[in-house]
Length: 479
Image 1 (cartoon, one colour):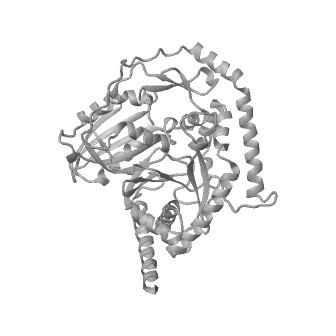
Image 2 (cartoon, rainbow, N blue to C red; image 1 turned 30 degrees about the horizontal axis):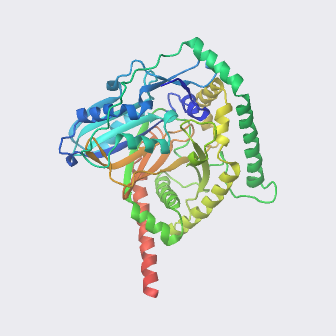
Image 3 (cartoon, rainbow, N blue to C red; image 1 turned 180 degrees about the vertical axis):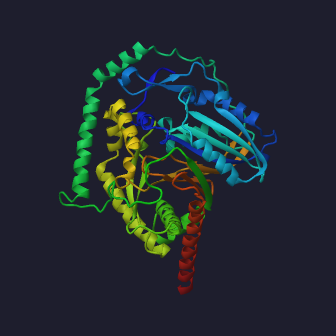
């Protein structure tokens, strides 16, 4: 692989990382080993991954910083690549529960990845009481987002249990020479000379985005949008200065149930996801001693791959800020309120444009970015000011058909997104065949037990589904 510079957005995820703010994305899969006649084992998994390395070139590249941070880092081939430094076998005590495994996952996710090798890892867990195998995958956010993560799955997974391995490459892989420091510095200087117009264009787009936000959100001009802004969030038990401790929980609901609620009440699937999150968080906060007197503020990542500009890079994502009301108690009225608020948030996001976050990352000097990130945590600014937001809620499209890896069928994929300073809770859902898999990641020093949130989400889906069926029965009875 020829040396490749990270985009500003991809580099931002590296520069944001601290001992407490880890920028990896991960997921725990549960696999059924009985679906293959060839036998499923850690060794067969390793053989499968190794046989497909030529389909996933990013698995053999590592990040290299530019001297003096003259520019964003670059991807280079890892001359010492060894797959054994990325695949790990963990034998749990025989008869372990999934919750026991979740504790082990939390311990692993509490450590940032070392950057001396490509930024991905996998852990194979056997010994579970139900006979399934757990497979934890981790990649750094600098080289994957929701869409590109799905593309990676297509290279590693099959649609039948005992599919043949892909044809090996016609030319064996040999790493490109690692550039010298002087070469890196010269390349960075050349980029600064060659691309001033690109940076000027980014500044211009930021100015247009700010003006459009002012017109819409603050009522400058004819139209005013009722959209939330960062730092307008109430304080909750999961907001404050992060530590490195992580805990996880997960649950699963039926996709048909979410679709029934969506069609019955004229909402979108994402509105149903948000409503279930609101209902679960309300119950959780009540048990902690009180519900805030105003809506929560959540960030909903939005893919902008279809609107990608000349910046390039892996991460093509923007954020939509959404109010998440915890009132009223009635699930249907809550869903309708969230649906209306989501429409306002989408209009504000469209007014801002998809490029603003990307453009800010493009012009931010790497050294300044890292300094501000670390200073924020060192001074404990999140404990002194209102939270930038309360939580992040992501909805990632998953496979619509059964998938297999090394012959074992994937039963569930529970995703976990990263935490950012002041935000100690991340909620992520992924569609998976006929299910919706729900992953909860928390800062363990803020929330020691995340399972009530995961279980509460499924209960909320059940309550919404019950209301939809009652509405359908009432309609049938009146006809």
